[in-house]
Structures are given as structure tokens and as C-alpha cells.
Image 1 (cartoon, rainbow, N blue to C red):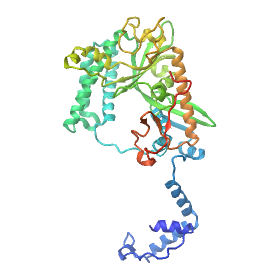
Image 2: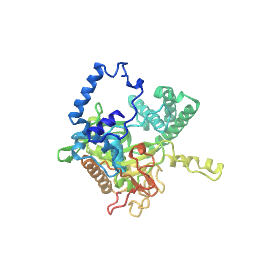
Image 3: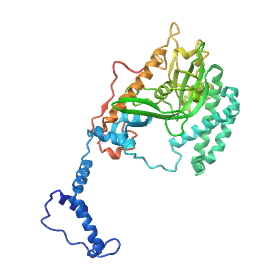
Image 4: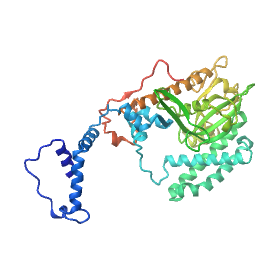
Length: 458
């Protein structure tokens, strides 16, 4: 209260008509126990007087009032944005997706570095990390033995993943999964899902010409094997795009020195590419990673190839997506087919790479690893969105690169508005960690409705 009174007084506020009662004697003592008239108290008073005379108090009061009045349409000045982020915006796909969802969300998370408090619990994020680590160890073990995934039988792969999971359950996050019976049950369920996945994936290798080459491939941070993807934003600013790719699969293209490249992103649930979210930058991570690999100046340093040809991007549900049945017998009778469909890859991939992705592509059902159908003349059946022409995949990556550039320029322009999107009943506020910060009323706020443009993303 004393500070508020002094700041108000510096700004010319009049004294109250009825002065407040004098503070209780106990409050007239300094924290160190000295009396109000002590030399220490007088020294602090002199410092406060000098602070007021310098005009700093007025500046502080103005900034506090501005903060209290921050509105949904407010943004930063370009000069302040440059001071906040520096000449090089070091960012990631997930951060830029936050900017596309709501610029204020990006500002709080990436500008102010505000984070939610992490709890010691086996939540969805930790469960996903556990599954990622198991698959990474599986790959690295085979690599150390000079083996490929396809060198194992499906049953051998299943057993190896089971052993790795058992070893990791006790050590993961300082024994998180052994903290109680519920966590231990969750870990065993994750283990079984991984065993089902690896058994299915290795079984597909018979018809899949690609080999997993790298897992948890990080780029852009200190110590990472690959550099950041540098994007020129103009006017002296750049973006250093960084991230970590769950898996990179490679296959030698027919009759060429270049190598086909696939990016795979592991998920804890079913996910598909939403063209509208992709078009507006809300869902760019998967194609952005392939676009970054496409721009590598020297892929041979880590991937051992001279040139990469983008072939596809896929989401893989590590827990499987199983349909329900009317009866128990119906479910059991269709168990084999259900498992095959549970781990089916979804995303976008090139028709040119189809013979390497699925050697059974000319058969009526294919291998089942991908969701596609061929039309007359072996062209993509447009009822199924995943299979596209090679030039469409190139256009998709070009579009994502331009989206990154546009968002980077918007960030340096100071865009920090509280401007969440709406897509049907879905909004950017649904699972936002910063709802208590932006202070909008979700019932009355006018959301930014996402609309399809003439040039929709493939």
C-alpha cells in the first residue's frame, strides 16, 4: 500500500480527505527490528526520494497500468519483439503451431518462458516418452549388432521390445512407474501395445522397401547431430528451426543416386492430417520435419546419402486404434485384421514412391500398412486423401516452408494478440495452459474462424 501511495503521489494524486489511522506500533518497526527513526530507515527514505525524483516511479506506474489494461487486440512493437527474440528466432514446430493457434499463447510460452508446473505423475506426456525410449533402445541395440529391423522375425522383435520395456519400467523417471500399482499397470499396458506394434511393423517389412535409419533425430540445438534449418525472414532477421524427429526411414530410389526419405511421428492416439489446420499453420510439424530434411546442405554427414527425395510423412498410433464389435466372438474372429488396421500409417505420401512403400500396391488390398486405393490408370483414388502425386507433395512442403516464413515475420512484427482460432466446435482454448492469463471470456469472445482458401493444402 505504501508503494502504491508513493507512486500515486509522484503522478500528482491528491492526498485523501480523511488520512488513514496511523499504523500499529508493531508495524512501525523495520524488518530488522530497528526503529522508524533509525539511520538505516532514513537512508532508505533518501534512496526512495532519489528514485522518485529520477522519474523511475512514474515509468514503473505507467508500465503497471499498461499491464493491467492489456487487451485482446494489443501486441508488441517491432522494436520490443526484436529485443525479446533477438535477430534469430530459435523456435520449433510445436511453438509455431502455438502461434498459429493463438499469437498470445506463443508470446507467453516462447517470449515470457512461462511453463506449467511439472508433476511427478505418469500422465499422457510421460507415457509417450516411455514408449519413445523403448523404441529408441530397440533401434540402437540392432544398430550396435549391425542388424536391421527386417533381420528379425516378428516374434523376435516382440520379445526384444518386451525385455527392453521391462528394463526401462524400473529406471524411467526415477521409478515413476513403480510409484504405485496404477502406474505399474499403465506401464505394462504400454509394453503390450508396443509389442503389438513392433510385431506388426516388422511383419510389414516383407512388403516395405524402406529401413528405419535414425530415431529421435535431433537438429538445431547445441550438440545435435544436424544443424538448424535457417530461414531468411528479410530485414535482417532469420528463423532457426529446430526439433526432434521420431523416426527417419530411407530407401534407395530405382536407378538413381538419390535416396527416398520418409518421416514418421509416433503418437499416443489416432491422428490424421487435417487440411484446414495445416493450411493455417496449426498442424505443420510432420511436413515441416520433412521440409527441413529436404533443405539439409549435407545429409551425408548423418544419414549417409548424397541427396534426399521426400517420399512421405506418417503418423503412427503406438497404442493402436481398435474398432468396437457387436459381440465378443466378432471381435476375436477379426483380431488379426484389427491389429493390422490398428497400426495403419496415416499422412501424405507420393505416388512415385508407392512401389517402394508397398510392394503389394497392385494387389486389391495392398499390404494394409497405408490407407489408399488406386483409381483407373494406377492414379490416386481421391476418396482417400493420403496418396498424392509427387508434385503435390513438393507443393505441400513448399507451402509449409512459406507458412514458417510468414509466421516468423508476424512474430518479429510484434503480433501477440489474444486471437484463438475456431474450427467447428473446436477452439485453441480447449486445452490451453494459459487460459488463466489471457482473461478472455470464452462465451463472448469473437474467435478467429478458420476458412478454406482457394488453394487448399493437399
